[in-house]
Image (cartoon, rainbow, N blue to C red):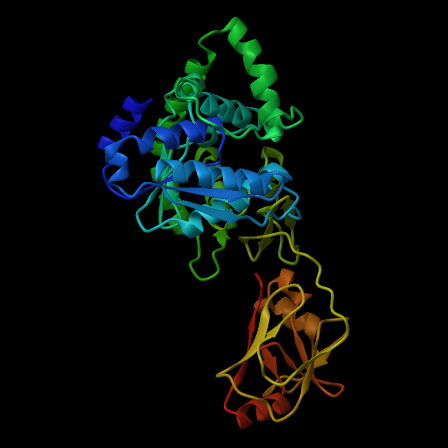
Length: 428
């Protein structure tokens, strides 16, 4: 293993080095081997450990990682993750999202975050992707390197079998953490690792090598396709709204359409859809005016509106407990978003802020008629998913402003008196 790392370091000579150190056998072998390479030490080698707080011994594990690094003379940064279990994506995925968010936040500029992922991990990843109906991008498995935060995620051991790392641990008698969650065979990867892979290898001893070879071929195909769909992505995406031209996307060949959609979602920190969910998006791309399709899955929702695709996190229904008093200070709104004055100042009167209950009407300044909010919203100024959280400004019982979109003559007078205007920043 040290020889493989030495070759990898020689091939990638730029950037400081940081090991994603869980304390398990693989990352322990990786960290120990790097610590004994001058080429790594001279590049500021350090470790980062994420305490997910999901196990009663997690604090003890963090202390173990600090002690192991101290014995090697290496700094070890420990960060506690906040795992959000409300997204509906499962505990494993939620923990991974939290972990990678910490990695991205704490990587130094140009730094390489090194993972102990190996050939067996790659084979498991490819099989899981296959069982989920992935295309060339997914079947290409984990990339050896990819951007992460202001640095790079780097997996230099993907061609090395798991046994090579375990043999290194045994040879050097290294202390390792055993996470009991790795024994839970109800989890997909663990079931594949402990039940399925042994059966495959019993009949096809070269299964791991063959699977990872196929992954390499798929990765090459995916990278070639990427050149085409990235060009289409730039053509179809609107920079201001980050929405996609729905019909233009639908017209693409599936080989470009699928990875483009996944990329668009991942850039926003959202999960990609299953095959069935993606097909539902495709069916809704030709929705008629007035229809407002929304396709939801754990971790994301996609709307089709004005012939464009709009993506966001699943919305949580806002709970408004009556009216909110407002005199111009930044006001955080239930369900997300903010209402403020620009430039910051104080209004001469106290307004109340509410949301729609139905039937509201306002006479915008300069308009000869009083308009229903429903009619104003349908004119296209406010996306459907923002209408129920749009702040309505009242003076007493009179509706004088709809966020910063429509102001009555009275509202204009109030805001002009302090030379400021309301500013609504929706959550999405």
